[in-house]
Image 1 (cartoon, rainbow, N blue to C red):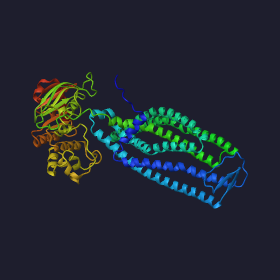
Image 2: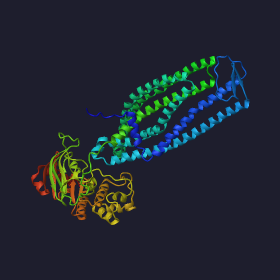
Image 3: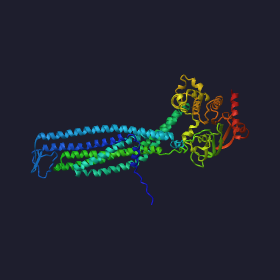
Image 4: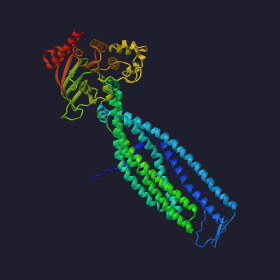
Length: 629
């Protein structure tokens, strides 16, 4: 008989996940818990002190009156010098002693309240420190995890969803953590301490609580189980709303160019309305919590008043005792209500925490290879019967049976139509994605054998979408080599035809680019990205349609600059223009994810119909443009 795996309850598993994020802030968390327990214990003794004062004053008020023999004897103060019961007559002793007793309990109440306030304040401060530390830890863990993701992982979650998980979900998790180390400790502690004191004070009345507590528990369970899926759905609507915002901001120039502000506003209004509706649907259940718990709480208080009032009327209970029981009733039921509130908040947080840990517990589809000492030395590349699919589905291949050899130092052009797999092909070299079948070899070694750092350190890639970061031109260029000298920076920029336009700016290399490089044109962006890649001094340079925004003369100048700067560098150029690849050592023609032909410009122009058609269409366009001019 096999061993059965022990499954932890969801609540315990949730708390365990939250506490993982408190590393480095364990002391503050533990002290918060201890201080909360001390604060709660001091609050619980206050009703007893108040009860003793009231009962003492009541006994003093009836001093000397004749009492029936069946009246109960209360000895709250103690000591034969204070009161004596003899044949149903209450005789009080020294009035000053009585006043001293009242003052004593009053002082004890003040001291207890002050210490309770102090402990509560310290607990709140330490809780805030631990909560901020928790938030920092979780954000760092999430960010570091995302940095280790492959492109396939990022595609799975989507950028907008990852942003929501790093912000809104982290905030929800932080609130839950702070609630756990403070409120979640306080409410059960108050419930237990108050219940014990209630049974010690008046057991007969305390039994009423045992009927109210399960009723509140049932309400809490029914509502919380129904609210969780609603909050989960709401967070998905948040992802959609954030995606709309992100898309609009990234394409703001296009939006304005096509005067589509009204359309974008309407689309965003729809997203926010969906969030509102989802939130309202969840809140409709949550708002039932307060009236239901209030009904149970006030019903219990009425029950206490009926029983306590009857006992006081027949002389079997004093007013101070009833006051204490009312206080304990309030503390107990308030604690249960707080537990209900916490449960609902944890339900919301559980959806957020599940989303956070979905990312943290996802393994990257790209893992380091075993040969950590292997580096890219020559830059030769081989594709051996390679199949690739973004969906890992052999029936939906993006690349099929790719066989290609590229010698070290060779320049290779790749052309093909949109969707033929040009970018997919080159992204397999630095392992942005892994092949579905076959092998990609660099220097004769399968890329899956390399460590990711060593492999990507030997490969520079200028992507179709040119990305620059906030900061100066120099800071962006140093991404290629943080230790690059000014001479090396200028040499790379001259090879990429970027030096002249950089020096045309008043601040030269210290020019601030703004967010995403908004202060430079598309062609200038491309040239800066090429210079950044050259500073890496790679063995393999991949240019993925990265000169599309420059004119043909500048394109040719860039290619000459690349050759002069690093003659032994393997260069792979994806281009739409044949003029960008015609001088390459060989050109690969892709068609529908397959290699249609490989050869030099002259060979393909002579023998390949696809290449001939592309060449004729571009030559015709050039002639027509020349005629127009």
